[in-house]
Length: 628
Image (cartoon, rainbow, N blue to C red; front, side):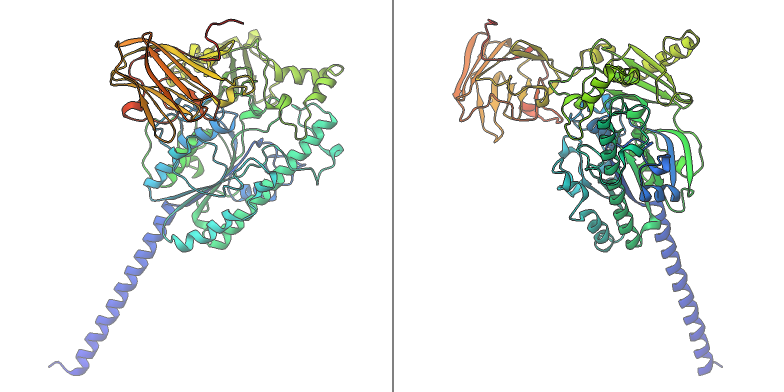
């Protein structure tokens, strides 16, 4: 007989079972969410600008005070053999965000775009559900191809120097707000200030006479002033990192966030930035990943900044991205591997500025510590911003003056300004790279092995010696220059006081105009194209003027455009288009001049990459006769 008491007892037991079941389900859900969080950590990258690895306390510098960087290193893993793939801002950052070496992504010279359609970090992480935000400096182009969410544009500008420290605290506010307004969505935040890039902050904290100068710097009063200001700027970068870490601590997400501190390349001193010497390429890299990296760990694994994108994708739980030059070093972070690359590659093609000499170099660095450099124009003096342009804490003239009487300074000055065809260094015994072993008979076998390694790497990437020797700069002659098909030149390659046409001529030979495409883009002023047996011009506002049907399938092109906007186009020696444009389009308006393509974009239709052949596309100023 079932009594009321029996029914009550059964109901109680069922209730307890239900509660236990619900409790177990809740625990399971919490465990799953926790595990998901651990597998999909938040990521914060702090990218300092122009910072040598050796110039922080945790890397052995006793002059610079970097308490926040040092604390991060004590709580995470510090890499001793981390290298940039280029010692310049845009190429280095393009490598970081694409996982491809400069030739393969297209950004070899400073301020150049990556190739159209190049896949990149924000795209990869967004596919994994991440919110990808960049605060401050971006310096990869074209920016519309890198779909970052942008904040901190004020401190992302080069000047004024006061803006460089995120005075509005936009980075801190983003961290505070994200975990409230985007609960459950993992965050990748890239903090990229302009420090310690020049112009440096004025020195306040350092006694010039007490500073220990690095061996690669000439000891002059002006150099000490510059070094102190550089160190002051490192301190400002450290303070900014501290505010970011403090905001992360307050958010409660510290234990579920991987923090990476790094630099894009070395400091702007001779034989550092702009060069492929160790001082230009070896960068700090510190990773704190709570519960994953062992606190205070030091790794001698050889890593490249090309590894950054595949590593972050790996941390996000995403699939391996095929075809990249970089390789994830997640296993090194977890302590499961002690080594990474057998060798890494780096290059410089310098900047596109008209007052630079083109002095490219390609190099390989091995895990054993051998560094081989090939210089492709060894007879040309090496010139960068350092020589004359950067007047903030200017010191270069003091080197020139002191070199007249001091042999050490003369050696350091010549080492910066001139390059032998080949250089070989043993980084284990010569970190300063003062002893070139390339001509020493005892090292002939090592030299040949590294020559072969570099040749194979360049072949793998698809860059030939002819490409390197020619370079991406325009070919100038008198008042004209030539752009080869599928090449381009930046506005920085032109002295605007000299290239200031009242009449612009564009000449060349076009073959395959029916399918055609863009003939040239001229500094954001206009795009000239050939399509459907016509030639046309498109202005930035979208207006188009087209020619009559062309009299031939191929022929000579002659375009004349004056400062009053009068345009005449001849093809095969016949006038096919005459029109009046409403402004002067002959001057440089920023951007690029191209042949057969749009820089950094792949368009369709009339502005598709030119499908025929463009020969000898030349831009001439004022006079076609060639008369002096």
